[in-house]
Amino acid sequence: MSNQVTSSHHVRDTFPAYQAGAGWNALLPARAPHTQAPAGHSFDVIVIGAGFTGLAAARRVAELRPDASVLVVDATTVGNGSAGRNSGFLINLPHNTGMGGHGSPVEVARKQIRLYDIGLKWLHELVTTHGIDCGWNPVGKYHAAATPDGEQRLRDTLAQYRDWGVTYRELSRDALRSEIGTEYYGYGYHSDNNVFVQPAALVRGLADSLPANVRLWENEPVVALEGTGPFTVTTASAQLRAGQVIVANNGFARKLGLARDRVFTIYTYAAMTPALSADELAKLGPAREWGVIPANRLGTTLRKTLGGRFIVRSAYSYEKERPMADVDAMLTDAYQRRYPQMASHKFEHVWGGVTALTRNGALYFGEVRKGLFTSLGCNGAGVLKGSMFGKLLGEMACGHHSPELADALGFERPTWLPPEPIRRVAIVSAIQYQKHRAGLER
Ligand SMILES: Cc1cc2nc3c(=O)[nH]c(=O)nc-3n(C[C@H](O)[C@H](O)[C@H](O)COP(=O)(O)OP(=O)(O)OC[C@H]3O[C@@H](n4cnc5c(N)ncnc54)[C@H](O)[C@@H]3O)c2cc1C
Image (tube, rainbow, N blue to C red):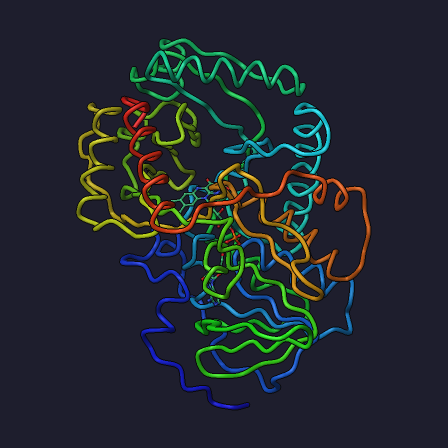
């Protein structure tokens, strides 16, 4: 294996380097990462990125081609990427998306729901088969609004739910107060289409139960991707070759020359309290676990966890992490406004995470050129979506056809993004406008 001399500045630029680790990962016991370079330098398939998308793709290729050699390379250790930084909602409904496709919006939504349901069943089987202790809890989710504009958005969503055949339960301010312990929201609903997980535990469990023909290499950023099959994949310390490459490093695929005019990255932020006493937990309502999705995308997500902690997620910043002290202050304020009755609003962990967005909410999915496959642009809801589309991408790489893959390929494609600096101006203005509109949903 050749030793590639790559400047450390260039390497740091090719993957998300965070100011703080995620709380979820910190709660788990230490794990020995696979940091040793593989013995060979040539593989049938190389997967770039060990998040939900990359792990699902690698698993599926290995299942369908048990003789193939598969390498998964990640710039950080499993659980330290966005896959271990999120709020742990596995939402099996279209979410944060305007994804259209061939057919009416109702047909497209129903196709998506069918894919998510298949993905959820597949993930659940993996969790059960491999005994992944990730707190899998199918208790649904709340959506709640604190403003008239937010309430109207929720009512519009419910009109879609009726078209899609999704059931829900509406809640008044009083009902919400008795279920989640706050008077902050005037209107909301609960739907069953969600499972909670400890995301770092899930992604670790998936990585550590890969089939025997998959080799995982962590802490090894990919810095360049060249060729047309065989491909040359240059990492910080090696030059590798593969007949096929699956690019699953989400927004950072742009650093490898892909999807530059379709995908952009946004940082969003979360904080977790210490384990709370029984008295404090009772102030958050009687259920052991619940979560709230805000009525505006720029609003605040809440989650009470099985482990007796409380999590607050909010805010967006374009392409760059905000200073953690600002984030802490902003999330503390969001917590205090909703739960002034808590004895303390101190967090034990505060962190940021990157998520890749497209202009119209569509995934950048499929075979980009012969032998090169991508699924990028999770649009902030990629735990389940990444797993399902990663699985389908693995099937596509194996030449496997299915009605699900046909549906995935029929969805709308990401629309064009203007180049910088126009892009920055447009996106930052859109964030500012939505932030203003979100008002008390923040
Ligand atoms: C605070 C927060 C809350 C969220 N809440 C939710 C939620 O509740 N539900 C939900 O569905 N989604 C949520 N998301 C989004 C979710 O985390 C992502 O959609 C999901 O992680 C996407 O999975 P992925 O595998 O496509 O990409 P990622 O999880 O981003 O994985 C990509 C991997 O590629 C690696 N990588 C990057 N560059 C390189 C490189 N050059 N070389 C090698 N490896 C590289 C990264 O280290 C990473 O491990 C949230 C995100 C954040 C930040």
